[in-house]
Image (tube, rainbow, N blue to C red):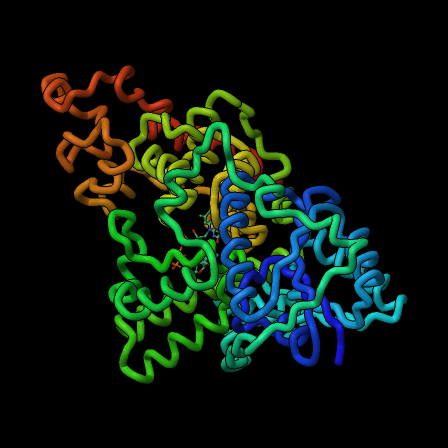
Length: 483
Ligand SMILES: Cc1cc2nc3c(=O)[nH]c(=O)nc-3n(C[C@H](O)[C@H](O)[C@H](O)COP(=O)(O)OP(=O)(O)OC[C@H]3O[C@@H](n4cnc5c(N)ncnc54)[C@H](O)[C@@H]3O)c2cc1C
């Protein structure tokens, strides 16, 4: 019989959790979550803290159903874990690996300390199809371009089958000396209070493993139909919305992969093979982002392409504030940022458009946008967020070239043709016809009056002329191109 401790981090689930299974295999388990707000780790943003709170609540209930209990603590794991392991006479510690530099360093230090104390430490891959170091070029080097990366990943074959949840979890009682360190969920103060801005998040999401499973099932059963094309349509619920569940490890990619494969075999998956392959390749982008993060630890703070170090950014806090609030006067951009503010999520196509607008039309450093997304997204992810911002900026690996500047009007007309998405999130424009809703500045005075719009008062004038802004961005890029 082994007394074990499973340290939950970004793996807030029971099924397909190899580290939890290894802990629960042959004896009582102490299930622990530590809110780590200091050290070198980047603190979670507000929306992620809300999600975490709900997810921990769901996890605690699921563990109790199996006989276990979730213990919550706050502080530095490097201090907490060795002391707890000693006082609770733990023989084995398990965790699921993380890949950001600070976590890798922390895990390494802990492993050394615990192993020196005679404790068995086991870490597992529970959040990726392939470890970041497993996919390499033929010469054994990290990959820089997505298509060959994904081809090489696919050539490694099917990912391992997901594991079941432990049948039961025997609860390991905390010694009195440690019991005083434990906290109730409310003590972690993860949810906003004054003001409580999380109403829209509560309406939109069901954090936790059960919520993740339900979303996957309904996506495979119906949502996947037409995904390859419709995934670009923000006016339709056309993507899985699994991203925050994946971020917090309430579901793992192996589970998604095999659930889809089984449904396809059984003829129960909606959509075509093209839809399914496209969806899998999006999981591939997530894998590629982790590959990039692992090999470029400062992906969120340093240009992957160092030519961008000389880029003449305009540091304009007022412009950034208008962008954050969805008050730019460009309807699709404002709709996206308001969707983000209300629900903690934004459609991928619109993420690209708002990011391009901030970086290129407003010439603001991509790191300002990355930080805002980090604070407001429920799926704020150390790899996906950094890699995607750099991708849009043109400074990343396999990035969109800098001269590819999204035109938010054309994007709106193509992907939100009737303007339903803008109408939903920018209701002050709701009465404009589809031909004008993406460019209200083209409406006649009579039409604006009829639609109840007072330009500059009920809805802002565009903060930049799109044509001039585009030219200014191209000129700025020309300045660094040869460097
Ligand atoms: C500027 C910018 C910032 C972004 N920040 C994040 C972030 O912080 N966290 C995050 O998870 N995604 C981020 N993305 C990627 C993408 O927008 C979201 O993953 C996607 O919109 C989530 O919705 P979904 O779950 O319905 O996606 P689906 O289309 O259903 O895709 C399934 C899963 O694949 C992964 N995925 C999809 N697209 C991408 C992508 N382009 N890059 C990496 N993984 C992808 C996600 O895990 C997603 O849940 C960002 C994109 C941009 C342009």
